[in-house]
Amino acid sequence: MAMKRFPVEQYATLELNQVAFPKTGMVVSQTPLGAKFTTDSSVSGAYGVCENGMWVVADKAAGVIDAPAAATDKPIGIVYTAEKEYDIFHYGLKTFGRKVAGDYPRVGILGVGDTVTTNCLQYDDTEFKAVTSGDNQKTAEEALFEALRKDRTVAANALYVVPVAGSAVPSISATKPNSGIYAKVVKFYTVPNGEPGVKYQIISL
Image (cartoon, rainbow, N blue to C red; front, side, top):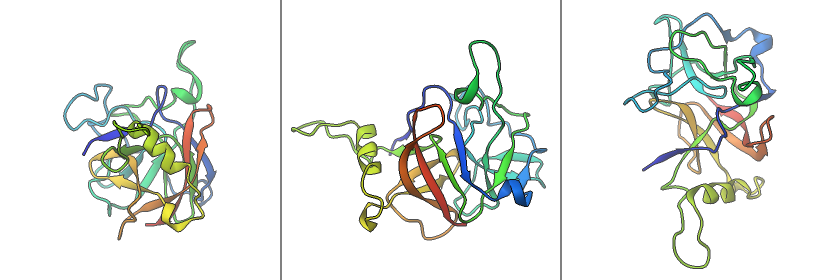
């Protein structure tokens, strides 16, 4: 199994389509990121920088925000840190997820029905397989996009967004989980900066 990131130009982005947490106050903003959020993602166990759209566990008792250790971790929230202009070369929706250990992201605790559009996703290239011979050759990414473009009203075409243990980036899968938090893909879409994205709705906690 090899997990691959959904294609992004630099950093993932997020659009809140319909979420409850800004109105209900289920927002965590005074808890720092844990040590595994680092600019050096090559370090074993590191998550990379914290990006908008990541699924994290805001553990106030432990005083740290971390990636889910298991699919049943609660409460899981989504990072939606405000857009920020860093300099004349790095600005806007492509670069506002540049937070590392010790920084304070804004995290909305997810609830059933919450719907967002993001490209902060990954996928398993053994599930969405590349075809390297014959007339219909394609990469794993092309196989993923092919699955995402299918008619979502057909039950057999259902895709899900699920947490990945030890990673802050959720994964797209055709397998419906039996428990824990997961979302259902609504449609293959674009994020606000025009890059490919996925709209999904939380259907189970």
